[in-house]
Length: 200
Picture 1: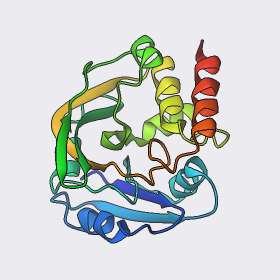
Picture 2: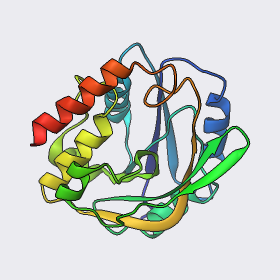
Picture 3: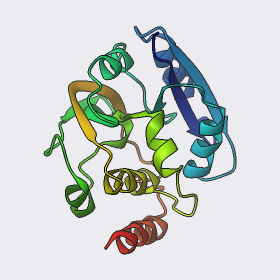
Picture 4: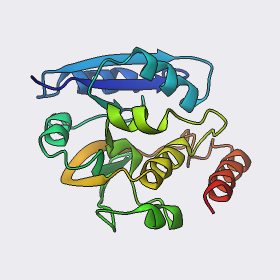
């Protein structure tokens, strides 16, 4: 039986790119997809958790409303799935300039990811087993919730695989919560410190 992929798009507001994100999901070559839009006043972790409660998929794909997927992203992720969750390469888009992100460590283990977050979050596809095993996202963390979840997964002995394909178009812009000029830098620093203290 074909595996169902739940694509969750969590967002506070449409900043002008949501339609492109949705369209990229509808244009996927992989046919077995459910799309879950979660708009809420919670932080990203809270909105993702609300989406997870609705998801029926065997796999979970998170897509921010300012990013979009290459047509074969989900097909290639499922076809080459080689762990409990997988990551891959990304196109980084800033204005009209595109660059490539290829992780320096393809199969990082817990100590690698604790030292530096080598895993490009938007490229990840999770088996639902990951959430069954370790739970959902920490809603007390505002900007590093995926890093914390990945550390929990690796610490629990789950395997992070790698797919040598470009799996997302990752948009860089000034309004980005995590790295843009509009980011709350103090909040982000606190969140990073909170994760580091938790795992050291």
